[in-house]
Length: 241
Image 1: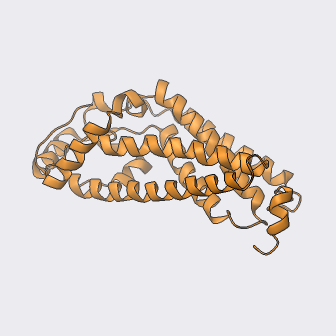
Image 2: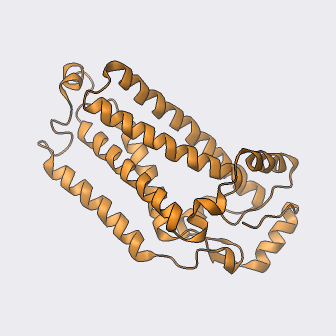
Image 3: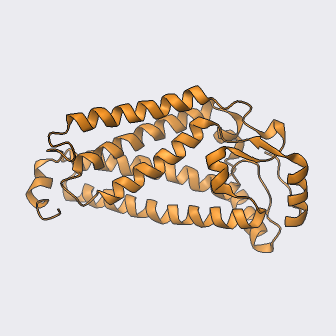
């Protein structure tokens, strides 16, 4: 991935000359915003027995999304592939140092620090969903519940770091990174872009998730949380509502 060590003013001039290209294909954007929705919803419903089924459904969805993202990171468009943006701790440290110096290296795709955060979030998401599944099925006892809560709390902290990085990156490069994850477009050269939006796959991913949610909703006895919890949850969950 091409980088520069130019000043912010020089970077802005280069961006203007390059124009906007499609960097984030639709599957990447659908994955990103579904993960935001799933984790937020799972966190909000974590302590409620009534919404237990919703919590579990969102957890299963997160697990499936992570599997999809790992596969797409291997065979997807160039900016989505791990090989194009994962560069290791040393490169991440150099990037952070360049931001502190006020001469941040600009990357059309993920910067090295953001790349490490993304990989860590994917790993943590696996840990959160796996421990949640084990806890829901009464595997590992109380210790597994603590592991699940600890993994979720670490993930929240890392999300905070990721959001801070988005704010700092947007400021350093004078570009709206949140908008880029909505539109998929950033300043860059054509050869650095995704080349293809893969709209059909993105729509199919969204449809699959919505279809799964509809099935889960219909299967819930009371249309919300349903029975949805195991015996251990039911013994202490009555006071949560």
